[in-house]
Image (cartoon, rainbow over all chains, first blue to last red; front, side, top):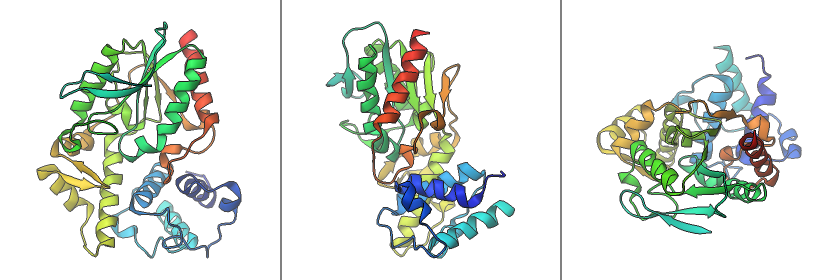
Length: 86
Length: 219
């Protein structure tokens, strides 16, 4: 549980979206996700959250998987950090 | 090559590399979308196993891939029965099961399991995909409602028409591995292909997986 949220989220996103190391490293809090990445369809979003649940041993509610939390890399990271503190 | 095998409900197909050798590996694939995402990895693993002198067999789960059976009639039980039948038909000496395949593989055979997953985790992802897809269509449902519908009458989730028996099975199924060696993704190196939205390939992972199996079989 001491794993760094930012590094782990980058790793999981990179695996789900098939991003190379350069693109993973280029993610910033302002990088748009939902709507900007065609790969991020409903199944990919479900896979992403499933992988995050496994990785951090947390569970997300339906209400936490929204356009707002998936808007940018920063909003998604905030959700993950908040969940791990909870 | 592709070969038919007799299955309850009608013949099914399998990708096979069979040179009638001593070691014969049955490969039970992951379930749902993860099956498509790992197909090339598994076929690459079969080729690499061939060069190690090992025959291998990758059967279709009834209702998937080239199968003529209806997906909605399937359950974990029907897949378990089918995989046991395939193991007998191909005279498998060992088994490799990946992810959700560990819920339905013939666990009396020695072998390997890769990153086993509980049925509830797979079901949770399917339900979540269903919630998101419904939301995109302007409907508001939650996972609990979808699960209830699925349990009573079956439900289409992420393009899969899941019957009530499959939903009920997933809800409670635990990995069946019993003495098989567990292989973690970190041993294979690289990204987990079953996570990748666009099906990919990784020849190095296929070679590594085949090498682990070849070393274990000879041991």
